Length: 396
Image (tube, rainbow, N blue to C red; front, top):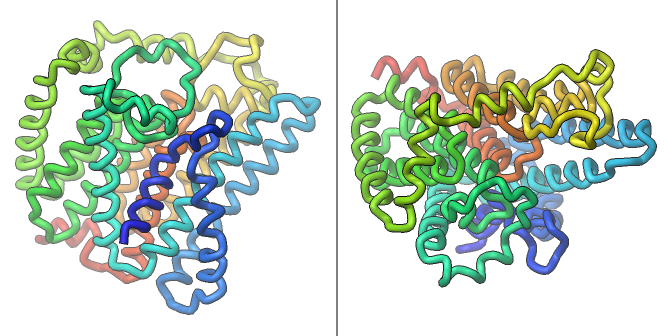
């Protein structure tokens, strides 16, 4: 059946709903369509794996509701201004519900490798679409109806950053691909799979993420380190495959003009993005703002900032930031003991992403990938998978 893949694709990338207001994606449609089936599943959650998944998901719903209540209170205190923060919360919530329902209905009772297989298919497929549409844009104009309007004009004209079938490109899709590489790396390390196709798929996914947003490197590099530490042979094969793919892709005529843009990321003396982020987008707004927030972001009170932590503090102070960090804290609470190295590396990536821009709950595509990591690790925990712990890896 194609339905599981279709719903997984729509949940992962939340394409813009054609002819609807900007920002309304298919995650809303998926949530509404699957709601009756999800409720039925919740009612008949007698099977242990389904019940386990539901119980473990409840804290995530709680974090969302606490964040939503805080936003409403902060807007009321601010005189009812900036209601767009409620719209942002609604979008984030429906993305989670969409991912949750899709996994619950189609994958919660299947073996974990089936979920990984489905994810590889949808992410590789969209990466192929991106490279095809970026190389031959004249043949893929019809895909533009699935993209939200880009507000900023400073993102450049590189077509390979925003030619996915996705509601958002650039930073959002790049971080999503970076995190999904992390999940695939985990599976590669802990499974007995020696599939060359899987290694090629991971390499292709990693390259796609970096082409979309160089920030994805903060997930791709730790993922490579995780593979290197645990499976040196896989790491060598993966690197050889990745090098060959990069050589082939960079030979595309449409990509040649962007080589310097990609290389400059590793030449700190030539790339000013990080310097500008640290020196201009992070600043001291005053003690009162740090504690209570302004209830507004980029309203002219301070200089413009894209930085995630800075925007959270400006809106709701440190309390709002801590509420959003609960997504990471819950992840650490659940999985740190069993997968210490993996969890620390994933958390590092997420915190780095949020340093660059709004990631925690705001980034639809990136958070979907984060939820998929949650779901996969939950599935291993529910089944008591003692062969996937990091200690056992070292003994093989």
